[in-house]
Image 1 (cartoon, rainbow, N blue to C red):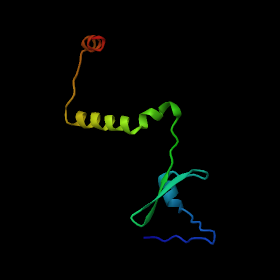
Image 2: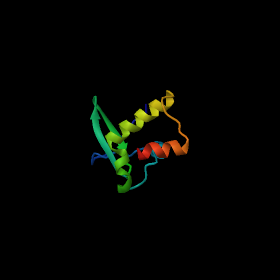
Image 3: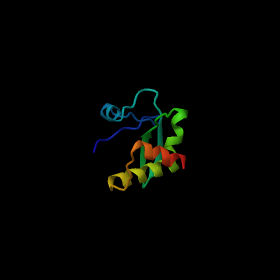
Image 4: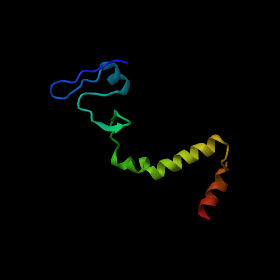
Length: 89
């Protein structure tokens, strides 16, 4: 385990190897939280407003469920005409 030093202003520097792995650049923002006596830092990823709906917890639950169903082979296949007809019904 490597150590960081806290400056007189309470600042730390994130080592280059970590910044490279996490693709953290100057000016990027991080969130932080205390978890079981540890400080957890996480880069904030900006999402275009037009795509924000996809990242809601409701949609992510549905995506995970669909992925699970697909991996388990629980899905339907259609001929295009049948699919379109079912959409209209």
